[in-house]
Length: 309
Image 1: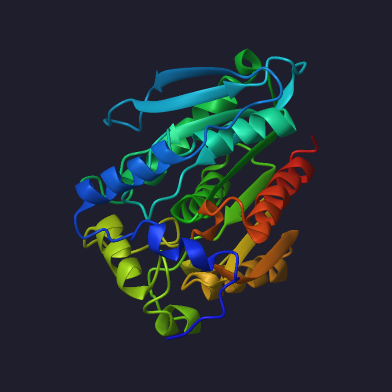
Image 2 (image 1 turned 90 degrees about the horizontal axis):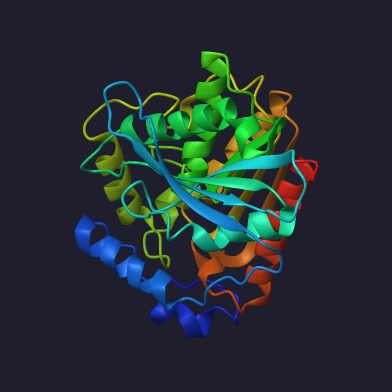
C-alpha cells in the first residue's frame, strides 16, 4: 500500500530498524546499534547522571534507574518519570538517555528513567509493576532528589506511552503517588487490535499490525488483558491527571491514541491531542526532518506546561 509520507522522511526509510520482534535478542541488539550510532545529546546546562538500584515490587529483583539532575537549577524542581518505548520487548536506559537529558536540560526537571523488565521473558505485570516501584520511590524520595512532589509527571513514547497510561490508572486506583501530568507519545494502548488504523496498516514502516500482534503476545504471555495492561479497556477514565497525546498519521496505533484522548476529554480530564500528518511510528528517529523537530519541541513544550516549569 502506498502512503503519503513526508518527503523529508522518505530517504531514510531503508535505514530505519525493522522493528521485527520475532527474535527479541536480535531486535534488542539492532536497536542498541541504532542508538549507539546517533549523535549524543549535548546539554547547555550542567546535568548530573547517577544510576541506582531501587527495591523492586514484592518478591521481584531490584529495579535499575538513572537519575538526571539539572544541578544548575535551584530546588525544588519538577520531576519526571521517563518510561522508554520498544513494544514491551526492547529498550533500556541508553535508549532513553537523549530524551531524558533534553527534559533535564531544557525544562530543568529531575528525570528518573526506569529500566523495567522486558517481555517475553518477563510478561505483564512485571514491566508496569517495575514502573510503579520507580514512581513510588521517586515520590518517597522527592526531598532528597530536590523534586517538588506537587509537580511530578510521567510519560513515554510507544510502549512507554502505554505503560504511562496504565501507570496513571494504577496510581489512581491504589491511592497514589500523585501525578500532575501524563505525556502519552504515540502510545500503545489496546491489545484488541481492532481499530481502523490497526487493521489497515499491515505494511507501514517501523510498526504495523503483524509487529503489534507479536508485541502484545509477548507482553501478555497468554494472560488476559486488564485495564492496566491495556488502558483502552478501562471503563472509567475520570480522576486521571491532565494529558498530552500525540499520534502519527501512518501508524497502526493512531486510532487507539485518538480514541483514548477523546475518552479522556469526555471523562473531564484536561487533554491536548496532536496528530502529525505524513509521519509514521518512530519517524522521530529522523531527527533532521522538520516534522521531527516540531514533534520534539512540542513534547518539551507540553511537559513544560504540564510541570509548570
